[in-house]
Image (cartoon, rainbow, N blue to C red; front, side, top):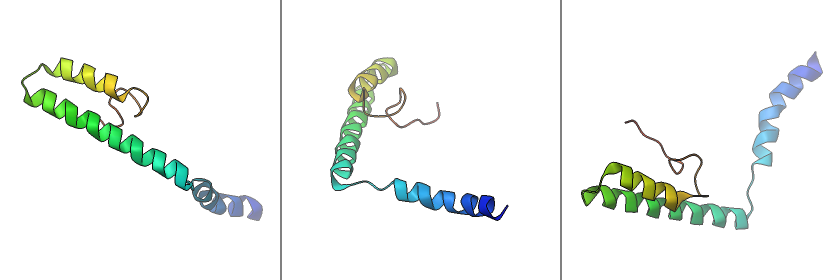
Length: 79
């Protein structure tokens, strides 16, 4: 029972230690975030221009392919 309790208490610490990124991975994450930011800025400008939201969403999905999780480029808000 003690071993099980100890394992449960240490599991989050092990998970945090395994989540460390090296400099190369951090630089990739930074670039990915910048690309997602540019895609979202382009979507905002598309909407500002008066284009249909569906067209802007389609362009966003195309710009974000392979960057974010899901079809919302790593960001979803209410609608």
